[in-house]
Amino acid sequence: IYKNIMEALYKIIFLFLLVVYTAIRMYYTKDYFKSKKTKARNKFMEKALTYLVAVGMILFPLIWIFSDFFVAFDINMPLVLRVVGVVISTFSLVFFAYVHKTLGKNWSPILEIREGHNLITSGPYKWIRHPMYTQVWLWAIAQFLIIANWIAGLSGIFTWTILYFLRIPQEEKMMEQQFGQKYVMYKKITGRILPRLKKIRK
Ligand code: SAH
Figure 1 (cartoon, protein in one colour):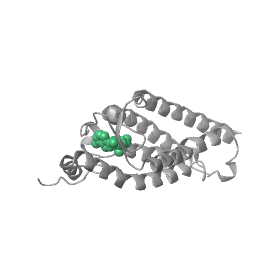
Figure 2 (cartoon, protein in one colour):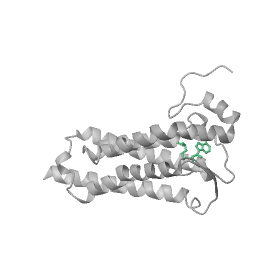
Figure 3 (cartoon, rainbow, N blue to C red):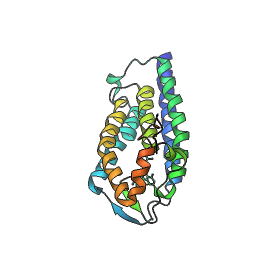
Figure 4 (cartoon, rainbow, N blue to C red):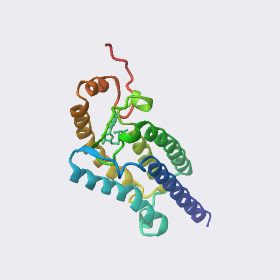
């Protein structure tokens, strides 16, 4: 019975985290849908990949929360790792809000250039080119630790890995086309999802 109460608690916690995640996203993207976009890259594939990630990070977790469908795939995860998952995801939500705020009106769910697009190099972007993707990695790892299920837990990491590796080269190419030398220079002084360890000599 103790175990069942704990499982229910993890489900409530993860649902709460998902709601906060969605609230932050909605708050910072209110203006996205009515805004003009001047360019899009691989639009069809980008959309498909975004839906795929939504299945892995939202739909499967929701099925895990509201049904016993995946119960045969539960992992016996130590309590401490699940707590670590909650800590990571809480931290990642704070970071998420900070990144979203910094990226402002340049955010897109797919690869697009928006009207009046600026190259952001401040805040987390001072050290990292893709802080929002850093955040998703943290979130995906936390999803696995909290949900502790081979299907609904790993589906986040699995779908995100696919989108991440297909998108990154395309995104950097698009940014380079848009911002030219400025982005080439920016690439030299920043890391992809983690800050660069060594300073480069000018
Ligand atoms: N890859 C970034 C942004 C994710 S949102 C991150 O992880 O933080 C995806 C959109 O952000 C892309 O369509 C691209 O147009 C835009 N973008 C990516 N890097 C940017 C930057 N440094 N400044 C402004 N817009 C950027």
